[in-house]
Image 1 (tube, rainbow, N blue to C red):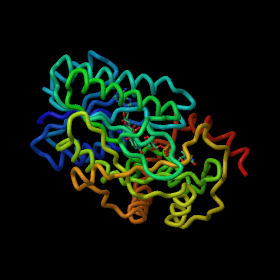
Image 2 (image 1 turned 30 degrees about the vertical axis):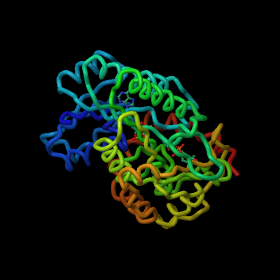
Image 3 (image 1 turned 60 degrees about the vertical axis):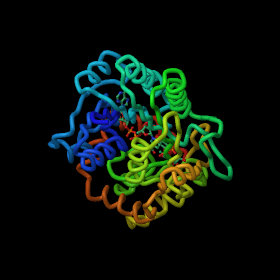
Length: 341
Ligand code: NAD
Ligand code: TDX
């Protein structure tokens, strides 16, 4: 492993992984390929901009010519695929881009590996491929029952990864991470959305009763788990990456307000997300048993640090809340908030 292509490396988790890898492994070259959709942000990569082992390429993983050119020019031997349309609510409004990137894009990357002899492919997937679980914990062999167009697209991409291992012997690995939070997360996902809205004393649209459960994973822990699987994961294997931090949405929302010193009256219960998964929960038993890996972050400490980061870095998020973002906000929330309890 020497020349690692990180697709989607200008997004939230991808950029954290790039910053981590560039610093941790100066002997590797880290090449980012990113289409720079609304979620891609070059500011996320400013900390590594001048590092000699970092390169950036703008391009679409679903574009065969671009992918092949980048593979050849940078002598790519390893791919870590973060590139995706990643927001469930946007997939409900418009699924097309999700199928295009999260299924077709993954196929194009895999096919380029086959054609050009790239041996190693790590795919970043999600706990959402399992669907919802009322009690207990999903393990890697459980059936996939994705419920949103986003989750279904991620499941489709993952199954194509599996086929390239079984059929062509490509050394693939997959991680299924849980809800990830931390600095540099685009302010559409619930944590950064609610933090930045609350800073401006704006209403926080909590879907339904707010009693849905998510398992929160700090972004640094997610990156470290991917590093471990990239280096030590067995070909064809899938690994859950859970945060071991189950929280009801309403409790996370109240913590955010508490850290900001804001009133709970900002919470507005609004119409639920269609097909809303009630609970996600994963077991990390396989990662623990195989690699002695476990998340190392204390949830409340990390959430408070994340809130502080958004308070101190308005330069980063304020400019994102304009143009297309406002159009999306209107479509997603205007009617919901007008009819809020
Ligand atoms: P993000 O939306 O912040 O970033 C996605 C990045 O991919 C952006 O930089 C975007 O420009 C890029 N991209 C989109 N389409 C592309 C294309 N066709 N070609 C090249 N680049 C493209 O997403 P994120 O939250 O950082 O998630 C990264 C990965 O992790 C995704 O695959 C997602 O499914 C997965 N994941 C996310 C979470 C989470 O809680 N955020 C949890 C588990 C798994
Ligand atoms: O405005 C909101 N109000 C609200 O109540 C938003 C944006 C979300 N929510 C709820 C829905 C979920 O139960 O908060 C919870 C978290 O929502 P999101 O941040 O949209 O995340 P989720 O749908 O759980 O999916 C996330 O975790 C798995 C990521 O977006 C995915 O990319 C990842 O695969």
